[in-house]
Every structure is written in structure tokens, then in C-alpha cells.
Length: 300
Image 1 (cartoon, rainbow, N blue to C red):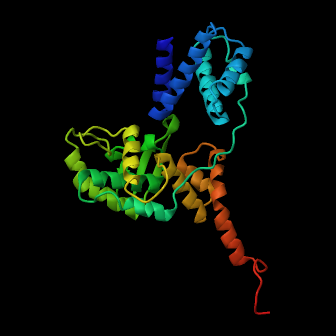
Image 2: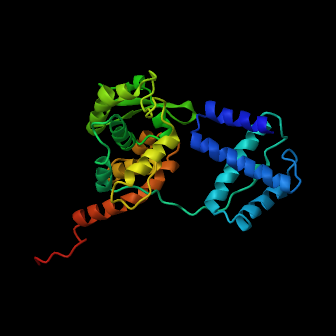
Image 3: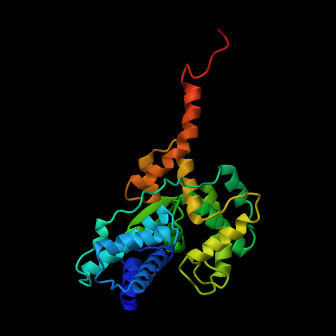
């Protein structure tokens, strides 16, 4: 079974281009399910619909998982059993018959613009690692790319003249993202100085660690954790939170949803619609400034 799981993870990695973080979650979800089957003396090839329902009850009642976590695990297993069915390892994918619990709508967390400005002031502009860290912040915010896409950027993917980057996204789909003047300045500084000092191994990748190796997604998260500790910001930080900030600020400044969808690399507009909540303040502002009877006029 271990071989089958490894082959499935390789399929997700090389065919679907899933991030390391996503792959770890998928593998952990599968292993947890197999442990449950072993405890119940069940074979993964012979499970029935009722076995899946009992497993969901186990996650809810014994593991105390929330609905969002259960739904994610169910999605992982649905995808895994689809792979098993396609490979003729199981007869059918019973997980397609099971609906997950209703998820509570979790609104994306994001930074206010002044918080990002404070964060951008933390990295040094004279040291190689400081130049790299500032570019990480600027590029995540300027482009809205996923952390897996960020660590995969190669220097050759960047068009310095047009200020755009060729990104390899989910499902090996390519797209171009643009960046602005602040990111361009940080990029030029890093490429002309810090990158050469870090690149002792002659790597083609843009973001390198202090030993010259390619930065990992885990490495990026660690760097962000260290940076925010040097600010007065009382929030946890993640690459995805900066991505949320990118989308939120675009919408608040009047960018349309379809454009934000393309910039984020979302296949469906549904994935982008979660950001529309953040435009509420902007809508209120426009309403009170524009609607003639929004405010009482004291002149009359």
C-alpha cells in the first residue's frame, strides 16, 4: 500500500503540480484513514458506503474535527479513490456518493495597507538575506502568487523590461503576472547584489537560502514568521495571507472580480467570490459620498 500512496503523491506532484504543503496534507489524510480501517479490521479495497459514514462520525465525535477539516479530508480521500479506480485497484469510488458536512464560511484574513508598509521596513536593504526577504514580501504582495509558485520562479522566467513573470501554476498551467515599481526596485537590488552573493551553487532559481540552495515553502513561512516578530503587528502571517491582501486591496480600489480571478490564477470565479466581502467598506464609502439622500443637508 505504501508504494501505491507514493505513486499517487508523485502523480499529484508531477501531473497536478500540487505544492509540498498540499501533498503533505493529502498523504496525512490518507494515512489517517488507513489507520482507522486497520483499527476496524477493514480492507481499503472492500469498504462500503456505511464504512465511510462511520468514519466521518469518528472524525466528528472522537477526533473532534471541525466541519472544514472533515470536508478537506473527505476531498482528499475522494481524489485518492478516484485515482485507485482509474488504476483498477478498486472497483469504484464510493466517496463520490458522500457529501461532507456544511462548512462555515471562513472569510480570508488580510493585512491593512499600513501594516504591510511596516512589514516592508523590516528587512535590511544592504545584506543578501535582507534583500531577498524584502523581495519575498514585495513579490508576494505585488503578484498575489501562491507560495509554491513563488519558490518555483527562475530568473529566466522574469521579463525585467515588461515587468512580468511567467508562473507555473496548479495543473501545470502557465500564466503571466505583473509587478510594479516597488517590487521592480527590490528585484533589481537583489539581482545585482544579494543574489550573486548567495548563488554559490549557480542555481537558476530566484530565491535561495543562505547556503545557496533553493528556498522551500517551509523556508518562506519561517522567514515571514521571523519578520513579523520585528513589527508591532499583532497578527499571524502566512504567504496566503499576503495573497489575500493582494486580492482584497485590488477589489477595494475598484478592480473587477474577473480580473482578480485571472490575476490569482483561479479556474473558477467561485474561488474568487469569497473576497467580495471586503468591498463592504468601500461600498459604504461610495454610497455616502454619492447618494444624495444618504446624509441630511444642514443647509436647508
